[in-house]
Image (tube, rainbow, N blue to C red; front, side, top):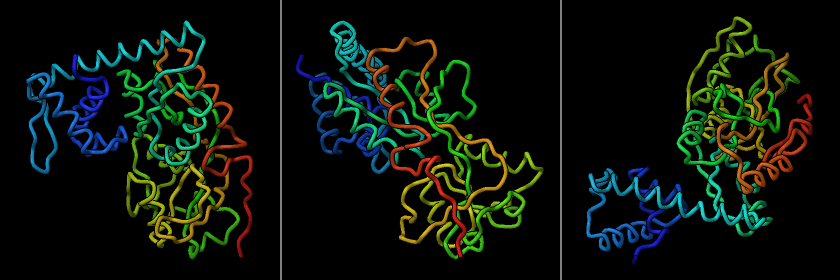
Length: 316
């Protein structure tokens, strides 16, 4: 056999994303390396795996679709050898695939993953980002072992273990009148333009905060990208409601943002670990869950201002 498991991994990434560019972003490998690996695999197997579309990505050929299914099976078997060695040898080792809510990943994953692989050098951690629906789908398809996400409409086949609570707050630019208030009530927001974080289930959570008080927000703009929302707010387009509390008080363009307490009692979003209920935990998964419990709590959250340390002050 003159092809490698690494080449198969690159082929799988390209086949599932339909793009060398997206595959590169997903597995953090350069585009030329992925292209070369696929070409070598096609030459070795003497088949065409993809149809290349200029500026429109890739599509699998019929034999490519069959090969993708078989390649995923081979990779799963190979990874099973690491799991078997870990379980019988008492060592935490092998690959772990982690899904993470797209709004949490920039803050949680770098510190969390680096600390874990430093503590357990025989492990490899691969992470993917997505919204809640994508993360649940990844767990069900066994594409990921665990997901760091919120307790938003968690289905019965998913086991969720809570780690930290994030109450909602109001986010405004420093020139906004709300920036000088100690707190803002839901009723105060109704007449103001809202920039909505438009992600599945997240948007329903934020809109439900208004609905429970019989209120209707005035949505001026929407975006599925957290940093777009933050930058629009910093530039005076309106306010937004967030749960995440980045340690940086600046948007990407350098303009300052101000967090303001949301008056009243509101259901927080709970950060936690989700996994498929019917699957038994491996030693590796168990070790990562323990690691997350040590790193994420109401007193400390990587990359964020933790709820227990938040100090709301009146601004003059």
